[in-house]
Structure formats: structure tokens, C-alpha cells
Image 1: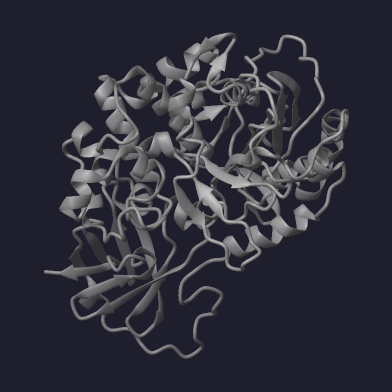
Image 2: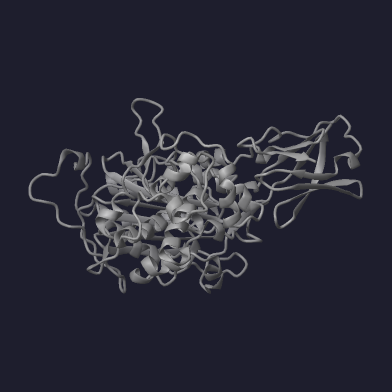
Length: 537
């Protein structure tokens, strides 16, 4: 995302993992009225815990309840300072839902209030949900985490035949296939569907297989689709049958149409001239549904968090076998290598961030972000049996991460230790800055003249993105891209360089140079993997 794309990289890879941690609790909170509960994890064996399970910071009785008691004020303060339209929060502890509440409105035009059952788009939090679904299928014996995707989906192909034959479901869920960061996302923005995008992944260069980490929505999606193909159904149906139905997640779906049909749904919002407006059109993520297309409420996600914290069980029933869930929530790739000797590393499991808190506890987390109006985050601490989820309906600026971090500090230490709001504001502002050689620049006062516009017209071929068509009308150049024939004006900059605004989630707020040189047209925004040159025949 400009925001959507780059935030999902940073947060998904735990580069901003400083806040998403909580530590152990000694309280025994009571469930809220009507709340469902999960089975507690198996009791620890007699005797002291092994050294690698000992926390460095213990939590006294009552501290978790005190932290929960602070959420209202923390959330109110964030709503007031950020001016985002709406937010919902839920907290679970020891198998019980101990907090559930909505704040603000789900749509600035209607003024309808957010409640705990309001459905939000989850963006990349969907990856952790997807991993749980796959773990269910592993438990059934349908696949393993080590099953090659090519075996499940013979049409799946990457540029290296060895990688094509050997890359597994787990490799793609751990972002260690070698595919470049956010492979396929720009094709989605241009209107390509999942099948079209997956067919072109073979044209992308690969980094070292299983020796590199790059966050890829469509790599993970390919693995999930392979599992659904093996089950003889589509991904949305498999998710419903394996997870949403058994957990009673009645407001959750992996289909955008279901989200749009919910009467109690949070519309996405973007900030325009200092005011939040409903996104039009909304973000439609069906092409990458396993990686970013789930919609849900905090009430439903509380059920899922309790199940994960209870080692895959709910209400005394096994939803996901513990031994098949464990690989997903264990380190599989180094996602955020330390840059100094005293820094903690960040890891990625299968669809989960896995790290260590300052209190010395394993932390499971993920964030999600759509530039077109979603910012989400959850954090789980298995040893403490605590989880928090925060969903918002605004373009991401770090609000969910800030609330989760503040709550984490209160749980661990009894006080907020950092100015998380300022830290996240700075981090997200940097991620939201436009990129490219012309970003932040003003057009030259005395530009070199362009050539005759008719000389630029024609169809320019590109194997990865498809053709780019340049036309002239009313002394203006226009660029047409993608299967939906999206058309953009080309504004002269200088000489053979023009500028345009790219479409979609990743192009939001961006500016791209379009440079003509003979029969070549280089579109800078699409040239990240050196595939952005289009050639006229």
C-alpha cells in the first residue's frame, strides 16, 4: 500500500513490533453476560517451568483487571486525538471475554454507532485466520505444512523449476519462497483476478529459496487456494466449514459480498482535506481473500483468540489439533533481523508474527491495513492466556497498534512505559510518504519540450503487466492499463517524461513518472522488480 502496501510489510514482518506485546496475568476474570468461553490450556506439568518458558516480569493479582479498566479512557483519548470515525475492541483472558465495546461511528454519512458486533474488514489479520484454517485441514490429514503447493495445484509455477517443485504450503505462509515483496499486488490494483495474477508469478525474479523473507499476499493466497482445491471447494467455503461455523463466528466471512450485505458493517474511510470520507469505491480484496479478505467483528474474533490460546479447543471440542496449530505459531522465518546486538529479532510463523516481549514472553500478533480504510491489530500471549484485538475503519495511522501497546504495558508493568502514540505516528508517517523520483518535487518552471504527442501513441507490450496503450485526444496523452482498461491522463513534466497517479490500494497518494525513450515506455511505479518497461512493436 502506499499506506496499505508498505504498512502491511512493516507490521506483518514485525518491523514495528515494539508495541504488540503483553505478559502474564494472575487474575481470574468473570465472563461478560452472554460471552462464550474457551477451554483453558492443559495444566503445566508439576515442577518449575523449563528455563525458556520463564518470564522475566511477573504480574501481580488484579493488574489485568486494572488494565482492562483503563481501556475506555485509552480508547476515548485515541478517538479524540486521531479523529478516526470508528473502532471496536475486545479482550480475552483465561478463556473468557472480559471486554467488548465499540467507539465512534461505522459510517460518517449515516452516523450509525459501532458496537461489538460491527463487522470490519480485517486486511492482513486475515493471514492468521487463514493459517488457523489450514491447520484444521492438516489435522484432518488432507495436507501437511510440508506439502508442495505444485502437488495441490499443478498449474502453480515460479521462475525456478526447483522452487516450483519444492515450495510448500508452509513456505508460502512463512513468506520464505523467494518471491519479491508484495508480489502480484500491483496486478490486483490494475484489475487482474486471482487466476491471472497466479499465472504471472512465474515471471518474477526469486530471492534465495528458504533463505530470505519477503511479505507476499499472493504467495500465501496460492498456498491457501491449493489447500481449498485439495478439499474440493473454494477458500471462502472451506473457511466457513473448518473454522467460522464450528466456532459460531456468525458475522465472519471470506467473501466481500457477505461483508457488503451485513447491515452492521463499518465502511472504510480515507482522510481528504482534513476530514474523513467514506471510501468510494471500497476496498474489494477477494482476489487475495486468504491474505486480506476476511471481515469480522471483535465478538467473533474473541472466540477465535480464545480458541488459539486454548491450543485449538473451544467448549471442550478440538477445533484445530494443537500439534498442527503449533507450527503456525512458532518461528519459521526471521522477518525482522536485529540491527544492533542488544535488539530482539522478529520472527514469522505460518501467518502469525512470533516474537518476545520485554517481559520475556512469547507474543503472537499481526496487523492489517488498507489505504482505503482499515487498520487492525491483535496480540496474544499464550503463557498469560491473554489476547486483545482492535479494529478501526480508517486508513492506517497506528491507532490499533497504539491501543494494544498501551494495554500491553499496563498488563505487564502496571503503567504505560512509552509514548506509543508518538512512536507509531512517526513510524506510520514515514511509511505513508509517497515514493519515487518525483515525490515531493514541483514541476520544473522551464521544462524541456515534449515531442509531438502523436509520436508517443501506440500499444506497448509487457509480459507481466499486459499492454499499455497510449492515446492522444484534445492535445492530451492518456495511458490505459489492465484488463479493466483503466485510463489515466499523462501530464507533461519535462522532455519525454510525463506523470500520472497509479490506481488502487497501492497507488493511493502516489505519483509515477512515465518516461518515453524511443519505442520503450518506463512506468516507474511498476518498475520495482525491473518489470516496468513496456515496448512498442
